[in-house]
Length: 570
Image (cartoon, rainbow, N blue to C red; front, side, top):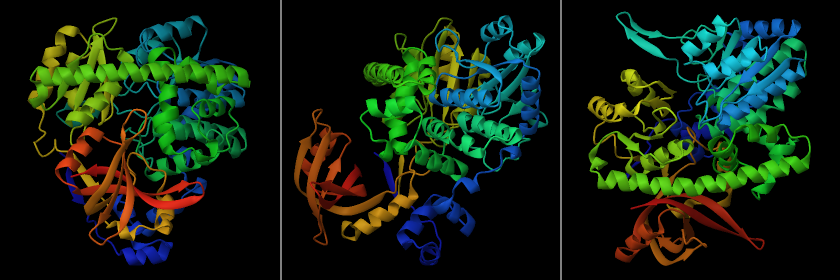
């Protein structure tokens, strides 16, 4: 069971409300997101293009632009090596489009998930050398490819790394020491030497910053760079980056452009999923469009999504979009089977008591290991790694919980892996099969998570009885969008909601519609999209419950009514 608590961060909400023309309740929600000070609040509410940081503040940007200028002037062949996930695909498309715009002789290679694995490798470097490539630009990868980039340098190629992943390190007597690749230039805000004001950029956003700097250098109208912001926004949401500071602006501005996108492929992907361009939100990127883009790299080839974005005719775009949607539908079914098997394994092998779950699914498609890990993590609320058989050894992905830095914990047992990398909350790895049990035991032996850490905490913004809901307040909440990681939808709580009627809806019978009242006699309709069986079981025992909710307006045949979207219950 989750532990509920009401966030009680202090500020003068009345004063903030007056200053920014919002209600004190909205001011409280903003404070709960750790947005403090007039300038930060202004940027949160009103931030736009003018508030984006200069790309030149990124360490290595000046040198990176200079390296590419020289390569273009000399007519060198440039190759962009990206990654097969949504961030890597978008980053690759941004760089490819930007470099072509300024006259570069450029092509791209996106690794095959099964054949090549993550990021740049010797096979791709040999291929580049054979094709006469003189300059390699990585995106969304490269920071951990120490031996691979050293090999490219040995073959006489120049390498520009653009990445956003954690920098590998080793602990020495004098403290932590970064292990950087021997690339000619590295652009990654995570480097210690980089003083960029916002460290949380995704790979697509770093790529966009490089293109913006190149356009400025070559005298290209900045509006051309802003056209590519929609792909930086898709990458930011798709890679589950925190929607704070500059990321919030990138997504906000990117969504505006998606609503009127001229990109034929993106339009087709929106249409094939039955969405309206003008209503696309961060939610649609995260749960509808993004999974389709990812599905190519998971079950087929990421080149399909890249080809979609580069489409110049509607017929081929529609075909590619349809293929990606079909692949995503297949991925959903495979994921469902994998999650069921993973949960069965945890429950039947006595691993339920382990603080770090390391699950081996030999027949699982390696591309969905991370999705399965995420769903198992949600079920048991503990760090989870899912591994499966690969061409060499086993490989997989991990997903973590707050309080457990997965990248750092894997670094402590780095000698067990042939390759690993990632973030505090997610990581990917390859290792010999014989190291599986040692990995499981070492991660659990080193784990310092307490029982309290492994109880999911649900932060409620305001304990607000439902009679205070109004259409005006619901409309005001829109100023807080886009919602996502780091800026979750506001959560409200009603202590005593008395359910008078309930019914199960939907072809999959996964929605419960309720009608109820609170202690003040306010009646309201609610919808619950979680676990209907569990919810109805509780209602059989007790019809007055505590709920967390988000308010909304239901519009049906021109008539508007207030309703609540129930998130959780006790």
